[in-house]
Length: 274
Ligand code: DGL
Image (tube, rainbow, N blue to C red; front, side, top):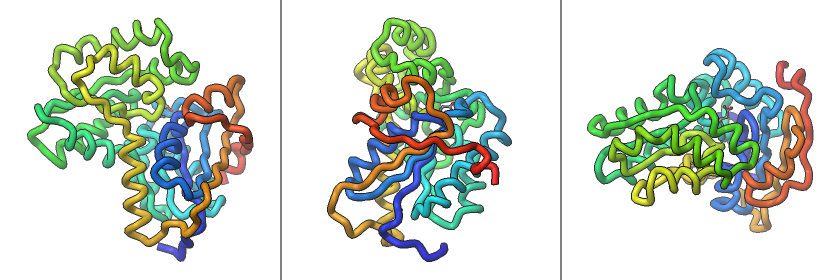
């Protein structure tokens, strides 16, 4: 690991704005840390792209954060975490924290019946990211996985309480309801926006796991482990960069982050390709 300083910011990236649900959790767990966020809004979604494309984009996203002098990289995208994390750990010499390991550990700690459901993008589910991680940690647990690709545009539309969201969740989760799971992993950083809908459909007795909460805890542990916690006590500074500023961006991004975003900077994709 290269020389890293405590006062450098934490870098967080996602394919779009979903990762802001993770920033919200990191900022609440580590309120004095500065955070630089990059959302690849010009190329979202990653969840329907091939592994090689997701790896290429994830490396570019992480490189951008390294240019911003970050002390750790949080891959706030389950899709990138499921296919690119090992590559990123090889290339970048700062702590790299993904979503899958932390989310899997939280799910294992939560289940009593040993029956866990996982929902995510097509790529995360096709790569069996959560089921292999959970089985590696506890082979006796049964894992049921389901891709729910329409949840991403629903969340980006800000339809957190819309009838269409209930209809779509009802359709996606109808088989899950028969599987007697007691824990459901929200294996996509967009999904916490739809948590109320998902909880309503799946039932109150199923515990939802927000992989952002799980990874924020891991970020805290990693900073402790490498003695990288800021010495500041004032509120951390949050900076937001995106590869495109879509219409309605600030309104919807505010919903994901849980507070208004006043400033966002667009980055040219050419910079990411170098
Ligand atoms: N936020 C991404 C994830 O956690 C999903 C969005 C996308 O498909 O790019 O997987």
